[in-house]
View 1 (cartoon, rainbow, N blue to C red):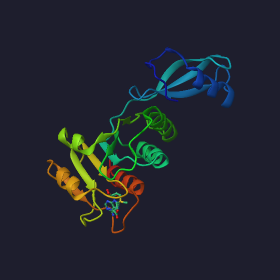
View 2: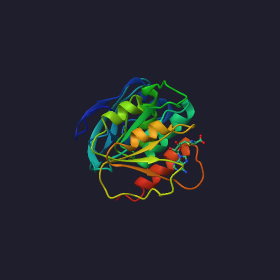
View 3: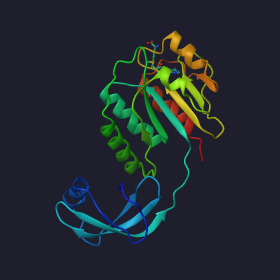
View 4: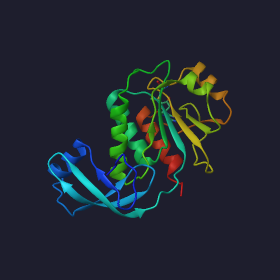
Length: 227
Ligand code: SAM
């Protein structure tokens, strides 16, 4: 269970109402039952239920069950999709291990609005489900030119269906994968992005993939080989 609280032995954690309701009324936990907690930074801890009512649950931490472990630093930058597809990409990118999820706006992007709270909740739920102890940061959408103007020292792989050089898992180090919109990047955008240092245009195979498939397949290729 993800909690927004410092985690250490003996800590008492009063849960917010929504999580209390879930544990008390859906999971039907009772005093003495145990569960595992994480907060995205301090590893995983075992906690027992000490107080429980329909709307208020308090947990007490007993011991650490997993130490925090470093993860690959790989961003996913993807042209914002319609709501359900964006939800899917955020869920799968969290499972696959993206460290930052950055929606981008491009000339052919067909959506420009996101509910960041909702996307962050999807990332938390996906992390809980796959037992990942770090929740990726979901950032507000940014125009691709703005993102590239401040591009940090980080390798960037642009998925480009017109290229034939396959995306191969790179040596460890900060990296990012960029996926274009359903209508593709414009030539001008691709040229602008390609002028940034540390950029490689890569293929994800010979077929034209849906943008969400490209995001998921590309991240799997980049992250599956990481130790
Ligand atoms: N420009 C194309 C068109 O309208 O015919 C298709 C764009 S594709 C649906 C959406 C995005 O997925 C692309 O911008 C690219 O980033 C990525 N993509 C899809 N298939 C790919 C492939 N085979 N190799 C690399 N990237 C791919």
